[in-house]
Length: 415
Image (cartoon, rainbow, N blue to C red; front, side, top):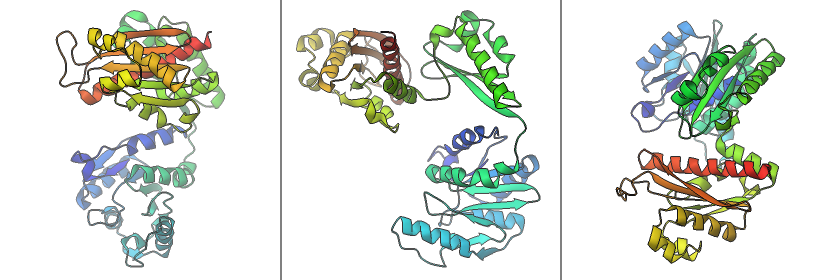
């Protein structure tokens, strides 16, 4: 992959297109061999193309297809391959249609979108303005998409398989078996809980360990000649985990996000839920509602940032706040109980903590958080002491909330 974006290198934006491409390719048993990020300059693009073409058969680029002076991808490709830039009726038709879709006036033939290096094919952009590009040269393929993540994804989904991937059907299939654990560090997983686990998993393929805010993702890349063989290996790995001392710490086997798993479980169990958020400021609700279909199970959230909201909306007792403070297990429990009543849900989870950088004390430092849950099974809660800056802590607090929700749903399934 060739990412053409000075904005990524100078820190203005972060790139997500590499991950988008990797996830898309996984479905075709293809992997990215190398990713290069370069500035929006012709010499930098030329050097990257030369290096990549020596190693790779397919090159996917993102960025530099827009109408401004710093969008040099087309010019760089043309000069690299010795192709003149010419007017393309095909590119103009695509651009006109895209502008019409967004009810915007199109400048006409003089617009930069209408010109391509000769022998390059214009590709429809299903979500934006700039046409993509495709070029085949001596058995090498180049597909170019815009840098805007939504548009880049649209180009991949529309064009990559028929133009590129269909020309290289891999004889080997691969799959990533992802084992998601919670609240246990990786050195303890492989050093104490199951010392032989890594070796056992390695018998099936390459093993990786990726710590995250909640626990560790243990991945096993398996390869096979057929889907049935892949399925057999995956089931054997799952059976191995089921009989491992690590099993109680495993909350999911798969690549779905915690938000996706929550909503899937809620639909299966016909459970409704909601949140009472203080330190997270609505982040838990935001994460859940980022998933399509969340309204089927998620009823709402109450951001009780100020104590007056905790008292007047959630019914937290003034005496509780005075005696124990807003950041306490007692307050969190009353928040959860109040949210369950106000939202009329099966499960309500609350969170109250100190995200910093100010507000901490020796007794209640930055990173202290209380999470509580209320359901027909009763009310409960816990304290956790986490680390990080404000943004990291808010996310880590929300992870604790979402995992508590999953654990409560699992109890529902058993009752």
